[in-house]
Length: 192
Image 1: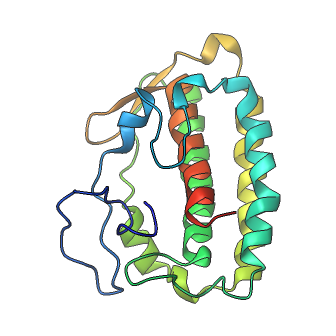
Image 2: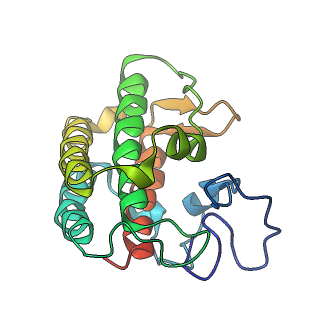
């Protein structure tokens, strides 16, 4: 997920074909970040305290707003690399998806999450054509909503499970680390 490597691919990864927008679909299973630090952004998901996630999300919001205000926010820095706008629209949707997943984990016993194809969402929702000012507002609203949901989690809920359709199992605690890595990593991607 760096500027020198197509989005989602690591150096040395075999890169599949590109989508119609020139982006390589991210087929990498990023759950490995739960076991070791991310070598690209340095984030350590295992160190995430569920009680601190809301504040951590809120701390990212001004950085996203600032990044979206850049004159080049809509320009892709290289072929196959998302623009700041596209990353921000993705993070807005990450906030929404993980807010829904966390709510489900807190309400149900071991729910299975609805599948979400982030690359299909980027194409279907036209991330590249959205208005950066609108995305900044939506991202802030979605960020505050997921932050409030994490704020409300009690310690006895940290080990409640949930699973993705591919079988990856999360607890509220591991979901928190996985989620916060995604948000933080994309700030690293846009150099914000």
